[in-house]
Length: 298
Image (cartoon, rainbow, N blue to C red; front, side, top):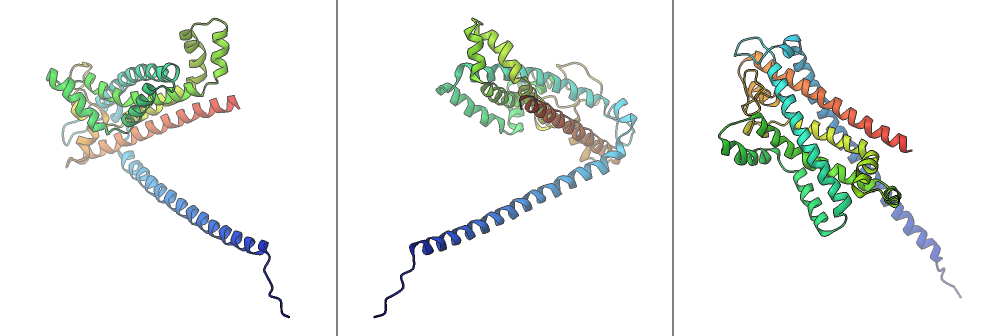
């Protein structure tokens, strides 16, 4: 009498596991290859852009670039008034945006918490982070420029401040929520008022993260062109009046790079190079502050 050989249950289970492991291995390696290819694709274009900016921009980097005003066509000159205008507008924007952003982020983290109003506010803030800058520029142009019938550096600073606020709000909110609750409880148990706990305990612990967010927001607004086209507009001459049009590097680049004059195009590339280096230094500074804080906690 022949008895059929019945395979052991463990053998069938092992075969299924081998097939599953093989499939997962193939999918994992395919995903790894595609991820590396996508990263390499992005890096190639990034270095291409940086090399192009460097090769064209170095031709216009000299002492005149930082000491002379924007020139007339076919004339030599620099971007002194544009650098000054960008510095003034960005400085005002970062001060306004930082103060309002830190205040709003503190309210979200310490008072709104997980309430419905806090959830809704965070959702709206996340939408504003990704809002197109040209929309913000049009909004400020309608609310301020059209009402006063005057382009102004102050309007440009307000437009950029509206871009700064959501970034600082998000960073402040996240950094304060990362502060251990024991620090709040210890300070409050000593009878310290809530506002003093926030100012002297929470802000000290979250300061590196908040500063990092402010620097990243500054790096973002440095190269914004669209909001300034509708608000600060531009000025070929030196101007310190915040209620009048004022030159800025992004607007000058926009005007010069499309011109038929080689001298203007060279200045536009030089301005792009200076802005790129400035943003790179800000990003490295923000990264250094964040890593230093992380190392000190470790």
